[in-house]
Image (cartoon, rainbow, N blue to C red):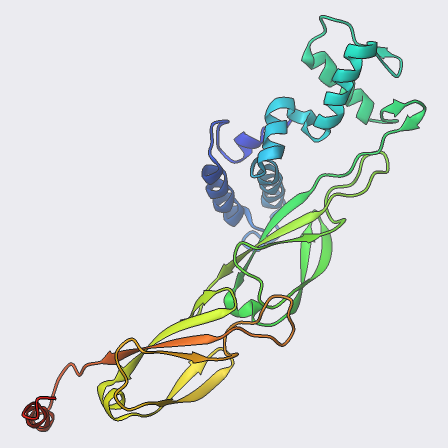
Amino acid sequence: MEFIDYYKVLGLDKTASDGDIKKAYRKLARKYHPDLNPNDTEAEKKFKRINEANEVLSDPEKRKKYDEYGKDWQHAEEFEKAKRAQRDSRDFGGYTYTQGQSSEDFSDFFDAMFGGAGYRSRGRQVKFRGQDYNAELSMDLMDVYKTQKQTLTINDKKIRITIPAGIEDGQTIKIAGHGGPGVNGGPNGDLYITFAINNNTSFKREGANLYKTIQLPLTKAVLGGEITIETLSGKVKLKVAPQTQNNTKVKLKGKGFPKYKKEGQYGDLYITYQVQLPAKLTAKQRELFEELAKTNL
C-alpha cells in the first residue's frame, strides 16, 4: 500500500490546527474542482487526493490513527488487537512476531495480511469495512428552498441523491454504502456530505425563521397605510398601523424557510420597521413641519 503524506497534499505540517486544515482544503478544492477544470485529468486526480487528505485529517479520530500508523491507519484497531495477541501467544496464524522486530517490520506484515488472501483467523478470513468518504457541496440558499435531486460524481461513480428542503449551512448527511470498498468482502464505507449554504438573499436566516429590516416612510409610520414587501414565496401586502414606532417588529406566520424534512411546514418571517426620515425637504414640506412643531407634537 503506497504511503500518502496527507499533510503534504494540503501543504501543511503535522502541527496544523483544525482551522488550518479546513482553510487549506477549501482553497485547494476550489482551485482543482472539476467544474473549474473541465477535461483536466491531472486536476481531477489532485481534487480526489485533496478530498482524501481532508477526509482523514479533518476527523480527529482518523487523524490520530493516521499520525500513529501511517499507511496502516485504516486497520489501527486490528493492528492493536494483533499487538495484544502477540504479547500473549507470540503467534499470528503461522507468523511469529519475535521480540526485537521493529514497528516497520510489523507494518510490512500487515501489508502482506491485507493484500491477496487477507488475514485468516482460525481458518476464517477477516472482513473489514471500507473507508468513509467526506465531500462538501456548495449551494445557494434558494437552491434549498425546495426539495431537489442532484447527481454527484464520487470517484468516477455517479450518485443520485435527494436534497431535502430546509437543509442548513454546515449540516452533514450520510449516504450509506457509497464510501470506499470493503476489504475481503466487508461492507462499503459511507459517504458524508457537508453543505455550504451561501445566503444570496436579503433575508437573515436562523433555522426555519427569516428576518428582514425594511425602510418605512415617515408619513406611513405616522398616518398608517399599506405597503408591499417581498418574501421568498412572493409579494405580500402589509397594513401599517398609525403611529408605528421605529424598530417595530411584525411577524408573518408561515412566510419563513421550509422546516427540514417536515413537508409543507415553514418557519416565520419577522419584519423590523426602520422609520425613514426625509433627507431633503421642499419649502412646502418644511412649512408643514413648522406648523406641526407649533402643536408641540
